[in-house]
Length: 286
Ligand code: NAD
Image (cartoon, rainbow, N blue to C red; front, side, top):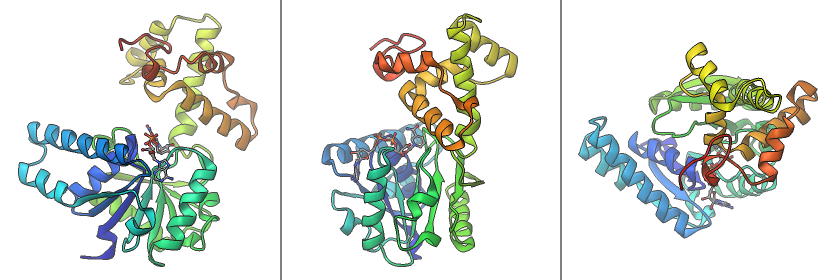
């Protein structure tokens, strides 16, 4: 087995458990790492449930489910968890200093030839790479939620990411049955650079009374054939996450066309963050 088949996933939250699921199902020995044992336990339960669902839908056999679970282990010790890996994928919260700390740890404890990937949505891969002594082997691997279902991976090249690293990670994404798309390291990559201004514009439409939220979403679902309207999607993503990404685009690209809509800011200030708080542009039962 090549070393790249030994994979660590750092952060066992929403994205980390999905990433670990997909790697384990495709033959990788996966060590899932988190500072919080309860999060690790919850992640394993989620992975079991999601594998069961795939078995029920005949997407995988029950033998594949068992093998995937056998290949999965967990630890709260990051240094130990990455000691033998060929690849570490980081999925800790979107905080710059935390990412710097984690990449410092990964750089010190993972083998010298290991690739370090980040699932960040908005932090520069070039900046993350600069926190390490191996910028040529640092790359973005931007998965989408829910990871076992969504086939896209933005493979993000930092300024000093090597061709070999890019080729390895793109090939790996294909082996995971994902569609890798090559993206340069600019704020928001492609996904959020295109999506978030659309959501922000939909919020301006609400604020200016152009139409009500239901009708705005209907225009985009029926008129543009989007599977979900922008305001429903914003509630699903979290309005705080949308605001944060708009702030990153605005600050780093320096263009006022990315200014966050005041209504988006107001809702976040009021704690109306979307589905996760039961109230955003729409209301949700607990
Ligand atoms: P989350 O809050 O659900 O999970 C983060 C996990 O990291 C938690 O379990 C937390 O205990 C753990 N953690 C915190 N500090 C740690 C440390 N020092 N070492 C190890 N683990 C630590 O977050 P998420 O939604 O899974 O997002 C993770 C990353 O993925 C972020 O960078 C985010 O921008 C990106 N992302 C999120 C989505 C999404 O839809 N949620 C989509 C694409 C990318």
